[in-house]
Image (tube, rainbow, N blue to C red; front, side):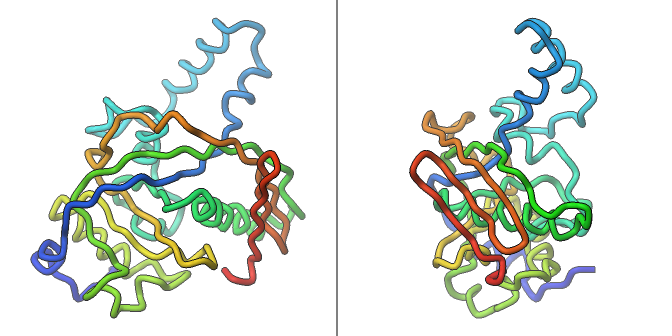
Length: 236
C-alpha cells in the first residue's frame, strides 16, 4: 500500500485556483492505420465506429470533451501505474509546460518500451500530434513550499508516494497536481489532470504540431520541419 504523511485537510489547505495552458503529445497513426483497410470515407467512418464500440466506455464527466481530452480517462493504466495513477485509480491526463517537455516525457516511455522489447533494436519514425489545452481548476504545486521539501516527488522510478498523494487529491476533488518534470533536463513543469472538469475548454486549442519520433537505445529524436529535439536516455 502506498503511504504519505499528507492528510486531506493539509493538502486542501495548500490548494489554489490555477489557470494555464499545457501541451500533450499523442501518436497520430490510428487514422492512417485504418485507412489502409478501406476504400471510401464511408467505410472509414464505419470501421472507426466498429472499433470504438469494442473499447471501454468513456468515463463519467467526459461526454462533453473532445476525444483527445477524454481518452486518458477511458483506459486502464499500464502495469504498475504511472506517476499519479495507481493500478485501480481513475484516469489521468498528463500534460506539460512546453512541447519539448511533453516530448521528453513521452519519449521516455517509448524508449522504455524499446528496452523492454528484446526483439527490437530501434523504433522507426512515427508521427505524433502535439496539441495544447486550456486548464482552470483547483490545484497544488509540488515545486513550492511546503511540498518542495519532499524529494519523493522527483524520484524517477518510485511512484508510490506520488500515487498516494494523488489518492488524497481525488478524495478532496482536486483538479490537478503541478510538478517538476524529471525527464526534461531543463527546469520545467508538468501537470497531472485528475478531474475532467479541470478543462477550461472542451476541445484542444486550434494550433497543433506534427512531430516524428524515432527511438534507439542511445537517443530519442523528435523532428518537425526544420526543428529537432534530442534526448539522451542517460539522464533518465
